[in-house]
Image (cartoon, rainbow, N blue to C red):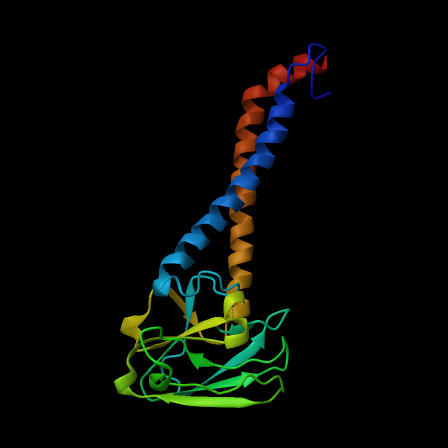
Amino acid sequence: MDEDSSGKLTRRSLLKRGAAGATAGAAAVTATGNAAAQGSLYGGYLSDTGNFESETADATGMSEVTIDVGAGNQGLYFDPAAVVIDPGTTIKWNWTGNGGAHNVYNDDQLSSVEERLFDSGEPVNNSGVQYEFTFESSNTGMHPYACSPHRALGMRGVIVVGADNVQGETYPFGEVEETLNAVAIFGGAAVFGTTALLGLSAYREMFDDDAETDH
């Protein structure tokens, strides 16, 4: 039993609840940390972009980079959400055909529509549509962009021209899946290890009291 006849919680009950709390606490800390990082990077522009994991895809050294338009289960992401390139690199946005009609436009709120650096035009939903733009040395810096019909849903991205302008950590372009899998594996191992250590320590301390309660 987890409670004695007086209704007092036994050591075993506390141990069970402590292990569950440790797991939930670790998950909450991780989520809070990610949200805080997303809120500070790139002026918070990607704070509500669901596939931005506070890391920027490093595509420096590449002459051409493809970004999917309409990625994710609902087709409402740019993938990758943030990418850093060298001056002279061409970005090719490729429509998947998912998530409805999309477009790509430079979302620089300090500029007028006429001064936008790039703009694909009216939203389209055909798969295989492509729009490309080459970022020159005069374009060094950060360039936020969005899909106009789905901007409020977090369909936003950032092109960073020049490695010196990256904010936060990076990962190799094209290794999104592997990176996220590694995070999940190591994160799970860390939570499991912490729970196991807490449980072992508590068990050793309370073993005698548990034995008395059971008998």
